Length: 114
Length: 114
Image (cartoon, rainbow over the protein chains, first blue to last red):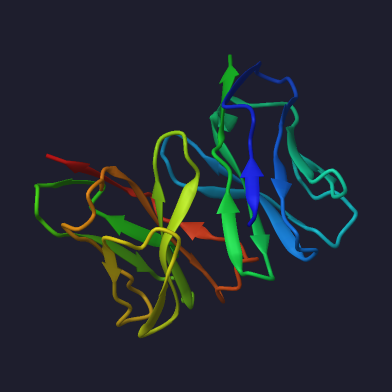
């Protein structure tokens, strides 16, 4: 079985500050991918960032970066210089090549305060 | 513009009624997926299809049915056997259906029971 845990149901931060969203996962597989998806108030899911487990280098996409700690099975998302448009639900997800299963966490609701 | 179109945006179901949610994509993707989203929970996979005329059950397929007669279309029927259908339904697609790829999502359908 594989699990994805997001222990922060809600977070808020002032505009222009940096915020980190936590995600931990559990899997017995060694070959997997990790994702962060964003769901704004429009409710359309959008891929924010992807990390291959075999890569040691943390993925970055503009203001978004991850801290991937494979041994600790931790995959946090850092948003720098936060903007009002970052207000959304953020979902962490894990894909295992072994069982071909994609599992989502329960999400973190992030609010950027003007 | 390429993308995924879901319709209707809102749908109401009466007791004992079957309803069909539409999902169309013009991305030329092979794989299509249906997810269910409930408050406080992550996305759960209902059905997926990696090729025309073939589909597989996901984690919560009971009470649902699908068809994949065309590459562009993957409609989901919520049958009367689904006793708790109220949820937000998201359709997604990916290029090859390997699971490690980026998922492209539609804007969703909110289904409620009258």
